[in-house]
Length: 526
Image 1 (cartoon, rainbow, N blue to C red):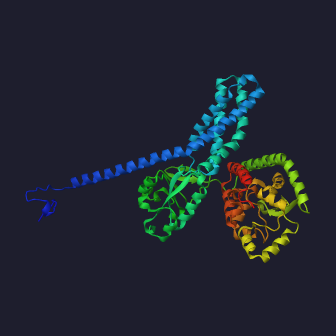
Image 2: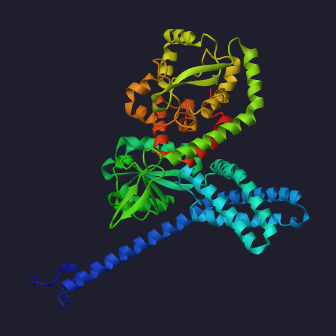
Image 3: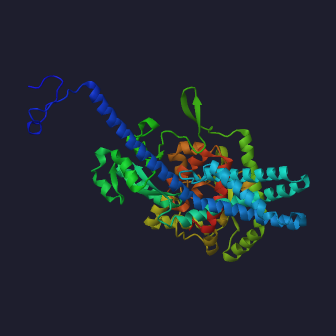
């Protein structure tokens, strides 16, 4: 019998003369410590590999954006300074390339500090805000450097170059990024492989969502599920490899995935609830509807505790004045620039079909007050009776109307109206509603209080309707640039609430410029 403190070995492996040293707690602790140290070293190596891989991927993803930003800034400042040179005469000849290079270099530095390279996972409107701020800071810094290094008379030249460049940069910088992203998304090597930790039921939705916004850079690489769901039959039809979440680090290294999306159905509401197997992945995004931070929520620290500061539901007087000023500037400028085109549309409508040029419809506005929203007439004079007859006789049309309150092949629309609707130009008369304060440039789509149109908005979504009445309805909005006629009525409600809860001047400016793209490409129009 072995004595206490000894180890019994197999007889065939130990001779009678074998001396077995006793094993005490110190030896066991040393073995366990060595094993723990080895495991820590392995984790450290894996973490460094993933971190270095993330750095390389971010650089490759951000490089085309850096080239686009540098090129747009350089060309814009160069051309503006050349035009200023023609106006202010010879002493400034030859400085265009130098000032353009300085401004473009400063833009890269400021934009990098604003996390615009690579800008993966950043909301489009926040990227737009940071980009405009970076451009403004770069131009201001360039003018300041000129103030220090040149004479006071020359300083006016650089100030004028900056002031004339900013409006152009406001449009061309975001546009260049969109073009570059759309082009680069066609290449398989561009983007960052992303793991998705979710349930089998929700995986298909998240994969499809990432694929529809491929230009944002996240490429689905694999699905992570909890151990109990690994053998779920629903995992087989997703189209991507499915892994146990406990093997997340190994999967991330094998797939070169440095990002992971954690679905809201995983019920992860704090960093402490994230599975430890995801700790080594450098970039983790938790999708949660339980913590409505919104676009502009700010992290705050109160003593030892942390929290998120949410903006108020209702804007203060100053912000309302800023929004109203923005509305007046945009509406006035648009009416002046588009007046020749508006006259041409009036003539086409007169020629196209009998009836008035404008069509007024009663809509629900701010505080629930009714107003007449004006449009160019795109339908026949007896449109309402024709609609009722078509919906009564055609079941398919009735189902389409109930789902979206739109008809792809609307029998009421004239040939001129078809063109105006596809280009969204039929709503330009609402610029008058904006000038008189009944509407805003950006806001929820104005609703019609009738059984045929939007009575369901008022009856079935009372909370949404209460929020709707706190703002002016808009000529354009989140719904128009996000899904428009392709989305369901529920999506319209969602985007209305999203806008009301996240309103800011930056969001208005982003939606206004984004609407230009929607109109030019006729996204979702019919």
